[in-house]
Length: 77
Image (cartoon, rainbow, N blue to C red; front, side):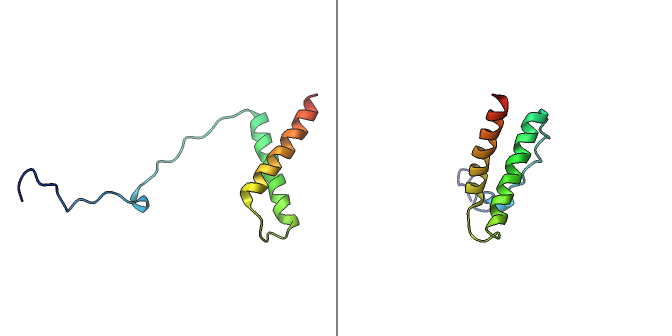
């Protein structure tokens, strides 16, 4: 093998071989944490009402988010 030839023994790492470092903890105010907790609970209840059958967890989250944000906005005004 010449010095300028690319090495064929070295493979690039695939997704399963990549190691992700843990994310640092997120410190947020009680209002943000409470909002996220309320959204998660509302999304859970949406799935529970349909017996956890079918549906889309992302759609549940987005609908719950809109519902909670509307509630929070009405509480402020």
